[in-house]
Picture (cartoon, rainbow, N blue to C red):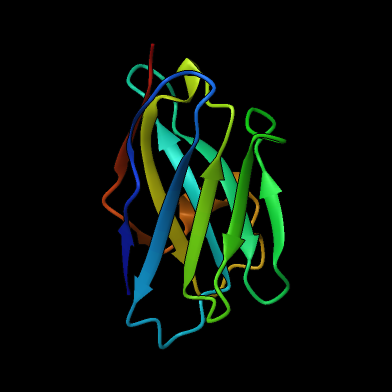
Length: 125
């Protein structure tokens, strides 16, 4: 399974971006999908996760109420809608997925099987 991310870029504070992540060759059902981020000088952070069979979503406190994670009907793509962006949201964002994990919360995702290459998000005036 390959995860292909897109949608990164530069935006002013208060702006929005949408990050799609598509799973190729997802013949195995992906139980969990989500997004993580890593900024220079900071620890990697789980941002959001979704359990694909139920659509249940989980968010880090730092993005709750500003970011929304959704999936397509085929459950092989997810979309991270990021609104009210702040400079501290600047990071490389990575999509991740796992076929077996039962814990789709962001904190559990660091052990997930599949990872994308990352896409840069910069929030600056």
